[in-house]
Length: 359
Image 1 (tube, rainbow, N blue to C red):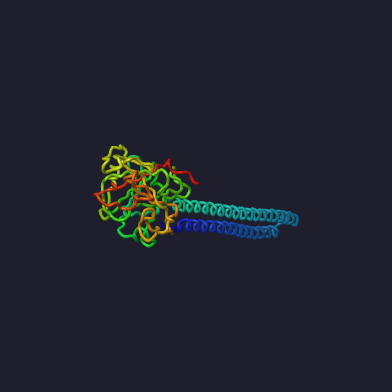
Image 2 (image 1 turned 90 degrees about the horizontal axis):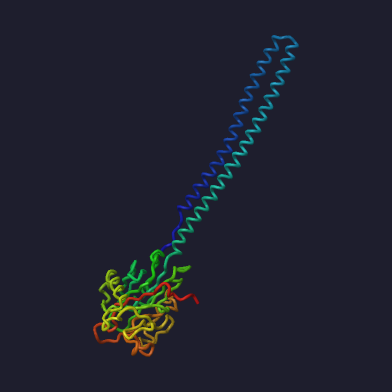
């Protein structure tokens, strides 16, 4: 996932700010123009009145002239008052218009900033809502969320054929950011895994969502309490592409019935306690130094510590819990003999309500 720049929100904010500034300028200039027009009209009116008064004074008696002058003064005072009131009203309108436009522009900018912040938080929340996955397997895996009836989605299908593809920081464990919606209405997290017929086999992973994910908690690690496994007895070798989702869903439902062939499968779902037909095997965590080569209790090199947490533990299927007791003996070491002695491919599942509370 990559971080996105929110140019749309910034452009929206800039556009609204410019529009608001334009409203403020227009309002101020409009008020000034109105005052100017009022001054011009008043001056023309004064000139006309003076000319008319002089003409009347030349044709009438002194008394009439006096009365005319008085009337002219009265009219001039009235016009002056009218002019003053007009100017005052215009100035008031100008101030009101400027204040209103400025306040409106400010509110618009604030609303735009709020909307932009909201959009940014929503987009950023998209990153925060992702389920972060780091996973690797000796040799192959897929994973997904679903219900007891099957997978709602399927990710992965990775088949590792070299040690570097399993353990190294360069080319080793895979990282995924999947939408939190992938786990909507899910009651189980599933890991599907298969291996070659050589040396070691196991799967190790962490699933994480900041703030938690429904009943799955914030961090889910392989090796946590509550994992179950079903050994299906359908063998796939790396390079085959592994089982398709339809096959996985069919085997999930068959495991639910608990009546699979006891000679080639786990019979159904088994946990870490297990049955005579098998159990979940939980092995070393990601802190155990490698002692030169695979051996019981120290089967794997460290998986890239830059991405794989120390607390994650290797998991596999123990096909003979009574005789294979880790770490004295190991279900993570290929036993040899037979066509499929560990009864893979394997389906691991973890129920949402079995996630242990944070320590």
